[in-house]
Image (cartoon, rainbow, N blue to C red; front, side):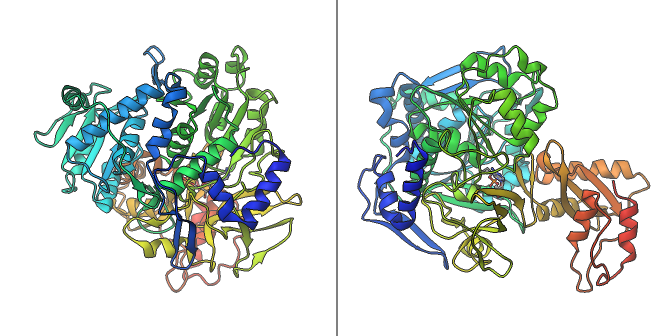
Length: 633
Ligand code: PRX
């Protein structure tokens, strides 16, 4: 399955285009199936309808755990570093992880969970989060992990959309100096969620919480029950390749976040294949992905990808800058991390502390570096290369999305020649195309366009939960017969791809995906707001910042307080990650005569580029532009 030279890459790529089914059947043959598939692929991008490994039966946890027990049973599967460095770290071997997953799977069963049920997970970055995810997969329940930074309202929306019957959470979690009151947030969410019958609560922060009789249960007590029952093994549920594995909510340009659906067989094959290849993982290496399991990067490259390959995956509960900005480097030194996969925003934030914190750290264990989540700027790329990799580690700039399930365009470490800021070449099995605004394919090199994918890959989303039409509309209607990514892209003279950023109304703030419409809806819920428009602007550390233009005639004369009120409102409706960085009060928004907000103009103003705002003559009230320009922050 592993490509180890550029020549092999080229051959594999060609084969993947000429005979995709044979190519993928061979890759899938590296996994453990209960029953082989009958047909490799069936697809059309019109409905869309995509099925991989039809008739194949498997359980992803057998691939991530059971099949490694003989050879790797005593090797570390998860190494966990707590937020507070004075607390003990934990190591779970494959045997121990297997046992814990089985136990917790039995806890879920004891509480009525069955195959196909949706289970919401809202937990801190502790090993039990990975255990909860795998336990769901073990029994065929569909997990919907919600990142610990989302608000009660966001959780309620997600729970209602998927009609979850169980929630798995913790009393609280730690991130830097902050204590996150997870259970309290869940309690607020559940006021609106009658579908939830049981809440299983892990002890982590010992924050006082309310535990409702009949609904709320302690994780530890439930495990004890299973132990007394002697229920420490749990046979894995046999899943169809196309059965749902998980739902993960993500933001788009309109409406509420949608539940991206991934299925068991294709996702497993894709996560494992891309992990093994992109990072060129070798047995015994310690691999550290700094993401949170609440995002797709954590699903595919902390849990499923690495574990399916028998890797040692490192989990970190805290943040890169606490208790000091050398925390990542201390971790790398202490645990002899070989592969470090992080985000440009983290790199930029660490850059701002200078190189002193790095000077006395031994980073010689590092062999490969990775970047994900947003375009990496040239300065950050070089800083990472020079100060972390000591010009000795290939950097894989991996482009992909929640919807793609795994890495799509990326160097293969040590195999593909890298180029700063370029995700370089598609992995074998991925067929990207650039299209112009008329939907015509832009061929040749030295061109740019909208990035689409014209052939299915096993890890792609199958639908958006409960609303297939939305899936069709969002991804398959803009360009006939193609999956549209929402990203702009250029292909240089060497055929290398560089992702230039979203071309829709989706922002990428510190690598977090946020829809402008969602933020506007949240702002508009504030009592003194009439309407608002949200755009992104370049931000030194976050990549993009959130700039809100707000019409609020009723400010009671205290703009600053209203501004703070709006921030509190957004935090309550979505979560702190969506808080605007700038709020400019305006008396109106630039609109066309048909009432459409001209975001192009607002974007320019937010970027501080007001020299050429283009044609403003079609505006209902051109004078408003002058007012907004004059008041720009
Ligand atoms: O705009 C692209 C950007 O992140 C978007 C996907 O966000 P999400 O679904 O949250 O997944 C993030 C982690 C895979 C993409 O549409 N993006 C992701 N990786 C890169 C990137 N932009 C440029 N370069 C990347 N390497």
